[in-house]
Amino acid sequence: MSQHYDTLETRGADERSRALAQALPAQIAHAKANAPFFADWLKDIDPAAVTSRAALAKLPVLRKSTLGEVQKKNPPMGGLIAIPLQKARHIFMSPGPIFEIDTDEPDYFRGARAMYAGGFRAGDVVYNTFSYHLTPAGMMMESALRALGCPVVPGGVGNTELQLDAIAAIRPTGYVGTPSFLKILLEKGQELGKDTGSIVKAFVGGEALPPSLRQMFRDRGISCLQSYGTADLGTIAYESPALEGMIVDEGVVVEIVRPGTGDPVPDVEVGEVVVTTFNRAYPLIRFGTGDMSAVLAGPSPCGRTNMRIKGWMGRADQRTKVRGMFVDPVQVADIARQHPGLGRLRLVIDWVDQADTMTLQAETASGSPDLAKALEATIRNVCKVGGKVAFVAPGSLPNDGKVVDDIRKYT
Image (cartoon, rainbow, N blue to C red; front, side, top):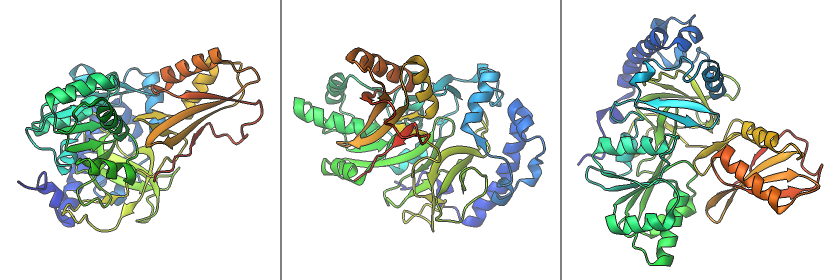
């Protein structure tokens, strides 16, 4: 059985450049003709002239904040999609709120290639613990697994003991979800005497995978690889067994640019990840992810020849990801509006005992258990992920404009 998904992965540089020269003008023309937003956004751009990465770099960068703004002005999709909304299969909602779609196209989010690199094959029964509620993560993974011919158990999140019962009974060979939840399942299963030994491969995302946690899985006989993607774009890049960076997916163009600009940086220099997708239904062009990464020199030792990046290296702004969900300053402001008696707020993200933690530091002279409980409920409602509350004295938080403070250090 081939170690590569298809021959696109092993193309030479000249063949890939020729394909790009044909695909870019066609996609830009399609977006302008069928998506009202892009007809205006790219009104001065001649699609026929955009035949290279250098020409693409001259187009404006589309920020995630702009998606939310145009969708709010012209709900639900802001003229961003190139099909009638009635032809979508699902409409998803991510924090912001920002809305995304999928269609009936097989492997719409292009995850099958990444999962194939991770060792998933037709017939593998896979336990999917990404959320199926409003956000697209669960469906993103399921569509990829179905394209590979893998039966899927839609576990979703939470209900740990019930999930362990299902794993023991169904005996899936694969796990898909966040690495921290896999750790919880393995440790809780051992504590309760529930058999999780059928799981021998894992494909994770949504949060960091530190070397120590990957080694813990390896010690339990589980091969674990990860990918990098977003709800808007689908898969951007993915690991292979070589474990030397992440290989850019064949369905996107990735640029690394200087944050706050659209100017590509030299290879190996850290910058913001900007992505152009060839998705016909949702044709995002030069989409600024806000994520930081850098290009790795040369092809992967696994034989895949596309560009490699180092993977996720933090955020170009204060927006960050916690347990698979983005949190950002807008959400902290929303919490403040709902609790007007508080002073400054700072949401501190840390990594404790191999898991993400989130603590809202809140200035107040009159903190109480009832207020803490109310704040925790608001955090979960606004951020879609739980967090604790720590009251601090008025005026004690720095006056530095930082409201989301990611202090995670991985070992």
